[in-house]
Image 1: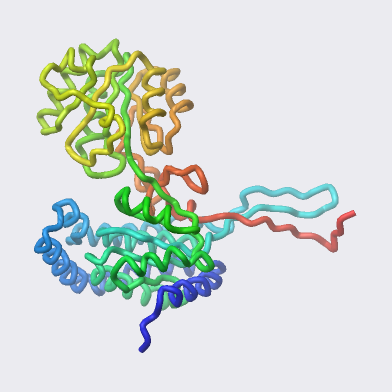
Image 2 (image 1 turned 90 degrees about the vertical axis):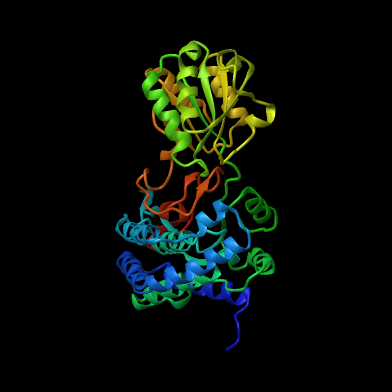
Length: 417
């Protein structure tokens, strides 16, 4: 049997997308349920194949962080299945009437949501992206081409084969879900040139990967480069709440894109807040770096440099800055932030509204942890990433965000005068 080329895969996806776009919601939901059932049937095979790839990654000296992202255990596998089931239960993002009217001549005009078409997902290490991406794309009526990292090729292949079988058994086209099984960067390079067949690319991984994808293709890319997330503690913030939110935002999981990287403290509460914060962070072994004013209160911490304000650490490191009120906090965030997630701790509705209106970020958190900015907590279920772009989507990318729209006009022989 001839091995399919990247162009073969892209062409087949385009043809499948035409059929998939008209598949009823009930059929797409049935496909998602069958995909979950098919995955359950190969659970042991997935765990065994994944264990071999995890061991190989360790022997090759891969980082502990990569090994962790690569690993599928019982808990992770069950979580992957739950995401498929949740997206099946979500409202249909297609065929929604977004706007409409009947003009004076009786022409009925409306705008309805439709799939984007073919989505290419390029990602590193995380096999859970394989199931999340397939689930979100099928729910939104899009064909999907998966290209995971070579370190998880066998795991991703087993997962994809099972999902294809499940989707086909529900009546979806065979090539609605495809994986590029060809290792190496050459296949990715070919995929980036398939603008005749692929409508959108979504890279998931480090800044280097995302930058290479965005700069190497004419296909539109949904992306975010950095998650330089801030929390501003206003002068009127409740101290206990402020400490709890700062700790959760930073420490719940330090290596993720919505983890806190810079903490801003109002000068009016700095004398009270900074010692409380330092004690809490140091108890959790977080390295603190502070501006000159911060160091007046916390003499033992390292100085923060200009580079720190630009840094997404993804590590147990946090920069602190004392600011002259909310205007200075907003100015710092809009200057140094990446537009991902930024929050305020305050008891003032006026300050909260000013922060929400003036901070230019995809997610703005009012008295809530930055770690809550995501598909699950926003009620989107599965997502395929976070976008800090403003076109075509912003924030968590779920089924509804993988749609476009078309205009439809119903007439009765209407002619233009």
